[in-house]
Length: 247
Ligand SMILES: Cc1cc2nc3c(=O)[nH]c(=O)nc-3n(C[C@H](O)[C@H](O)[C@H](O)COP(=O)(O)O)c2cc1C
Image (cartoon, rainbow, N blue to C red; front, side, top):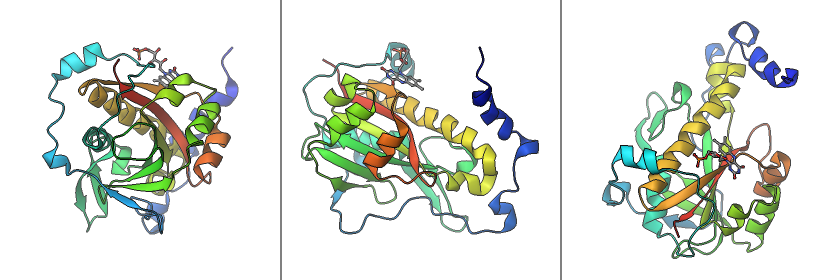
């Protein structure tokens, strides 16, 4: 039986059913990144232009990609992590006058409504814990060095073992107003479409450096949001992916 409540989302986001967006009412545009968390240490990431990784043929990366749920014990280097962050959410260009940034992924209306968080278990030179990618600054923000965090996250992901054993788990948070400002209710479609692009870039980028990922859509939203300190509806978890080196 088709679920009526699920289709209600499609119904409510059809053009005749949506409100005039704030952009058309001359409301100010929201920032394209959340502010740096005060007092939290910042870690410099290598300049993306200097990173010499990857280079795999695109067809080969697409054809050999599979979801990977078992990972080698080998840690990721900071350069590899930077490469993956750059290819999933890196900022290529900023137009300050138009208040817009172009990233390495597409996004409806170039709104880019995501923040990338990382639950790090095995990255050279980084203590295990929770971090955020500050894309404008090309830095990591060290948020919480709590060794029990990853176990809690695993439980919130229905106990999926690949969360526990990953080198890194990517947690993408949606900041919906960035898109809602332009598209009102229809934005909620775009958030999920945009997230798919980001995760596919991670799949292919990982493939090209002998890593693999598993997308994670099965999680308890409220538990993850509360663990992460997100306050829905302003910000909420939209997608995740575990990542590690191939065995
Ligand atoms: C939106 C989405 C959510 C997913 N969520 C999970 C998940 O929570 N756990 C999991 O083990 N795999 C998850 N997967 C991976 C799929 O199971 C996998 O892509 C599918 O079985 C096809 O296998 P392949 O990726 O190796 O081609 C998810 C994939 C997508 C695209």
